[in-house]
Amino acid sequence: EPEVTQTPSHQVTQMGQEVILRCVPISNHLYFYWYRQILGQKVEFLVSFYNNEISEKSEIFDDQFSVERPDGSNFTLKIRSTKLEDSAMYFCASSLQRALAKNIQYFGAGTRLSVL
Amino acid sequence: QQQVKQSPQSLIVQKGGISIINCAYENTAFDYFPWYQQFPGKGPALLIAIRPDVSEKKEGRFTISFNKSAKQFSLHIMDSQPGDSATYFCAASIGAGSYQLTFGKGTKLSVIP
Image (cartoon, rainbow over all chains, first blue to last red; front, side, top):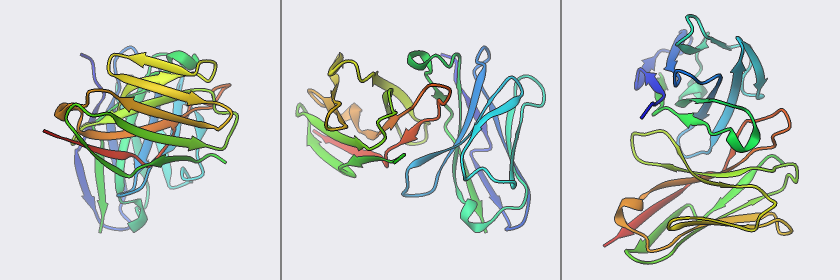
């Protein structure tokens, strides 16, 4: 069964460093998402991406964050200068369609980001 | 207004019993309500979903009950099995150009033999 893959599974970085989290969405999917989950809290939406541009973003997704689909298969989330509060599990998701009842978002296993 | 409140935080059920997880929302613009199941080390996976034009949806042992007037919906797992032990998230989406999912905090279900 096709799946969304994320690498690395765990990323440790120093505060102030840049990190890039990588995702390979399901191959024929067109819509891509990033969510995060701070330990013990709910999963929160960060950004959605379609046709090589951001279609929606949350308040969390500030200028420190950026997304890119560099090569037609990967989908990346970059945090320019990490803060302690960026420590969280980051989930990538993809969906084939946006039609409401068919917007089944398939999630990767996540990347745990630890900022020291 | 964007929140989805989920309870309980954790739930222990005997094998064969009924597991019930509840969610409530405030934003009446929500019109798609999926439930996700997450096993350790895996991402959330869609379990079952409902639109507010129906009051109940059943798929196998999993049933969503939806009360539009109370702005509440719940997941019932009949004949709960140890393999159902996972974290369950309710979620909601507005649609109409916005397909971001707003999640509840999750319920950790443990089904004991």
